[in-house]
Amino acid sequence: MTEPKLVAPEVFCLQTHDYRSNCLEFLRLVNQIAFRDNKALTIDLSKVRYATASASLLLFAIVNRAQLSANSKNAGQNVRVLFPKKNENPEGHRWIVATGLSKALMAGTFRKLDNLTKEGRYFQSSTNPSEHSSATALFLAERAQLTSTQFRLLTSGISEAMLNVHHHAYNSLIFEPDIKVMKGSRWWQCAWFDPSKDKVVFIICDLGMGITRSYCNTLALPQAAERMLELNAVTEAMTQGNTCTGDNGRGNGSEDIKRPIGVGCAKNESLLILTGHTKYHYGSNESQPKTLYQDDEIPGTLVEWSLVPNRGKNDD
Image (cartoon, rainbow, N blue to C red; front, top):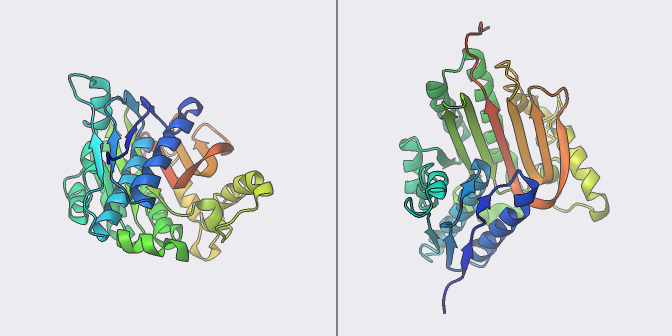
């Protein structure tokens, strides 16, 4: 019997409405076949012309969890990936291969995941916030020449996002098998500095319950009130005095996540959060964050910072 084959959309993107549904449906099918059903699967990325970092990272997370699950069951590598060829699809090769996504998608063991970190790859994964947060911030600071204030705030934001995953993203009995497979509350991340745009980008995602369910301490949401409940829960979770988990004993975690935005005095710095059906956006030129309900649901939570180094500014 021939194994299933899924062909990725040519534009692989989560943020844009025109492409989001196709992207998430593709990711849903990958997760269902490779992870839930634990079946062999071929993923065809050869026709992809453009892939955003956030969509690429979520694909890495879903494929990697499926690979780790297959290994734990001695089922072998259950995911095969076809990549764009440079001579046939140079645009796709640039987004899939040159970024290192192809190597990350082949990192189906814990040893290979560790090698991604040791080699300083854009795409990495971990379950240890204390070690990985400082290493990630240093990785970015060395390339982007952040000021000490930017470095401190970015480190705090990254640390808080990792701690949220570690303490709360998988905090339900339903995720215990996943935690065992992944050797902890795992997240996947992508970090880089783009010198052509003078921009630092850091993205982190998990495959847990999402902010709304974590904040409301429930896995089940009332369908009739789901839209307003989601938007309100994410807004409240990201309000000063709260955390992304509703755990008031942990301080102003949401503020740590937001504080790096605007420190560079730039008009195009931003924080993007995708969780469940909610898109949360906070920009340096916006007085208030914006939340938007989206029909398609994203698994877990994805947080993305886009920052500009504070060139020529006085620090502290």
